[in-house]
Image (cartoon, rainbow, N blue to C red):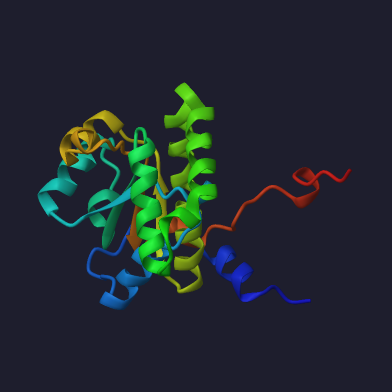
Length: 211
């Protein structure tokens, strides 16, 4: 059986090291990237995140310095910083419940079970809440990368950066946010040698375990 379109696109993609600085996303492609992030699932549907679309060239230059000079920060068409909330509380849950109730035109009291569950999850994580929240952005990261690849748009996930400096440059701390991971989006340069290298992934027999 031939591979599906999804598998073909995942085989096509790689973490681009050199971007074509002249090739930019169209408005439709940019909207695709944003909606891929926005529509991503999250554990318990918490969505305790913000996605910072960095468009100011001077800001991107500063971020590049704080990312040890990595060129995708400035050279990719678009740059997003995936930033989870450092913490959330009952007020966060109440706002979410009210938004859902308004959208679905239902009494907010009908969502008490969901509200109690989410508040219980928050309480159960205790001091580890920030770690749980940080993990959520990686779901959005994976969904976005796969969807972009399916549309022949390149993307590079990046964790090699000084997160404290990113928080300072972007003013995230005062918003209760923390820079967790970077997503550079654009189109590979014709002379990016990594584009022609055979794609390496560990063999299935070395990954999957049957029980």
